[in-house]
Length: 456
Image (cartoon, rainbow, N blue to C red; front, side):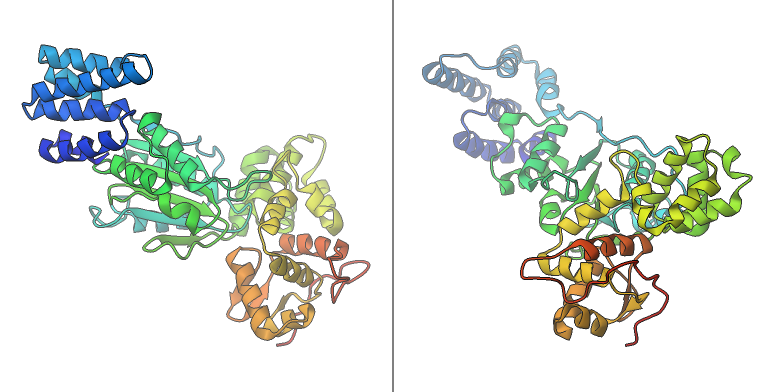
């Protein structure tokens, strides 16, 4: 809160003016009255500070039949004793250093280039520019479901924690969580403010007021906040700090390109060598040493997607009689592959399903139809023909799917699926009959292996 900063810096005139208005607007918030009493006392206006207490006590007795709370009563007694130092620490130093970060991933593997790129963009970080200037630093990490966005963000947060000693906060915004609605920005701000020890009574009701208080609480402090699993820009923007001494790491399945001034890192799948290393770290080097070729086949069949690799490795670890070659054989059966890549509630199909359900009906239809195509990659004309729509409409839908990381654009104007995503789209395309009749193209029977590019 700005008034607290004014008090800390000896600007009692500004603090008194602001707090007088706030107390008039929110007479029931005792913390505001306590700050006003402290500011008046620091300005050598002890009688007025004591009068504020009497006003609060009289109003509470008349309206509710109760006495002021212990914080206000204690401050009143300290002002009577002239205990300035204690009064100051009781109110202006309630900010508690806090670390809400999840544990770093024990078997975090690869991503060295991505880590160095992010660190190189952050002021004061290893290899980054010098002291921070201007607005808050914001780094967005986007990518498809299961690609490891949260793992990377949490890993970076642990590496950077020393640069932000006042607090390291983590909040899951549930933008793409099965069975959960995205967290409302106002509710998210309440959680963040409570994490900074702001009393519930001091938190405004509206979004704008909470956002302003959040930025004021962070002023002059060095705080890192991880905003994980964001749905869209509108959800994230009110949660961003307003000071260059703070850092926000944001993860999302969407690109969030509308966040002005943010750094953006689109996360791809792992390289083959990194994928093999992750598999080995989970399964154990002793099991992979004799089956290197099988390991390479397994991670290839997993599309080098970290979630799929982890699911396969956990399944193998829990089946001590299986060989890696046997697991590879099960994954070769295309129709069963997605079912095999399930570990508890973290299956690949479930993760893809959340992304699919967040698409519009038109985007879902295009996604399903593209999954029925035998082409390895395709252009706007192919998509328009499959969906029976114009080129402009098809192009817009393709770009939407790229932005949602449901489709890749390896070169301008050409599109393709990650293999696992293609299988998921194909499974939907074979089994869906939307309102109004059958889709314009439905392949029946075994799904053909994509081996050719559709001509432009």
